[in-house]
Length: 423
Figure 1 (spheres, rainbow, N blue to C red):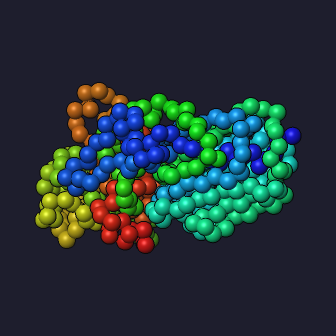
Figure 2: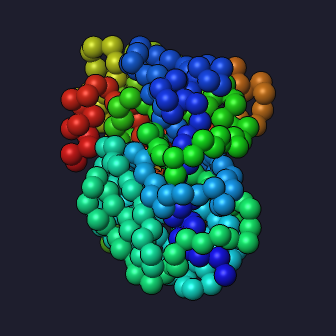
Figure 3: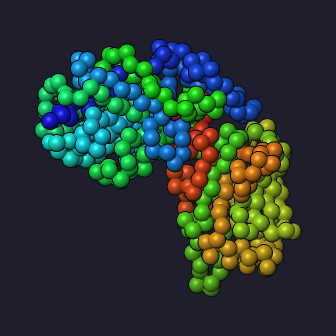
């Protein structure tokens, strides 16, 4: 019988070279891009690992393997930071599918799942950790007890779920961060494993074990950990996200059978020429054109509002299309035009019929055709995107570029980051 305590023993092994202070880009030789004049301070934080590198792939961002016969400590700790309310922080096993341990977030709170020959148990609770601040997480095994502490305060305690550490009849302990080493359907409680978060200052059992890195950590577009973050979804300018209209709300039709479309968001970006959002089955498009925001409805109706003065754009946006008028508002600037009846009926037919896609950050099909790559993608931060009053979740997309940070944007400055964290 393999003791569960070995999993918590797994919880920490000293990190790769950059844990000592070298930047990830220096170790791997990757290029850390700048993101325009509105994100001049953006760079990777030395010693931090972004655990959310790939969309649609539940495997870990980084893994390690150690010999359990060398384990001498049952305490592990690391700093963790995220705005993502759900996802895998850490998974470990000694016998895949039989003896494993999971530390994750659900509704922003820590969750532990344990599966072994002694027990199958899931426990959630404690303080929310999806506040964008660094938290010191410590997992410890003492006899038959598993303890999880956050910032020095006990959060979860599980009794009689393990045995004292003994020599195991296997020679490999595996650990993965930001993903799973088993199929998602084997979890005790279903969970979306994707995690947009960062880890630093880890201590994995005081052992010198290097990550067995995936190819994602070797790519030039590897996502870094921003020094400060704010809520939102960050588009670095080389990818888009696609939602199926079948998964978006149709919008309430009032008693007089009138339907309308409303899209709201907060946008932060530098002046640029790029598409912001579009639908695939009907020509509805919202684009940035250097100093203006433009909306196209059908083939003729064009709405245009100027950027606020000051260079960088940081303002609320509203697009409203009713049977009578199409309205576009950016900050304090607003314009409105009568809605052509045929265009409105076509849009209504497509939306209520749930036909096609709703694309954010580019144009439909832009990533599939090489020639389209010459057209730029949106670069900036989008926050609180609401369609028909429903906030979009970038973990529920039909497809998404790996380049996108789904739950975090670079912090404008320390003061702004603190204000965002306190919301």
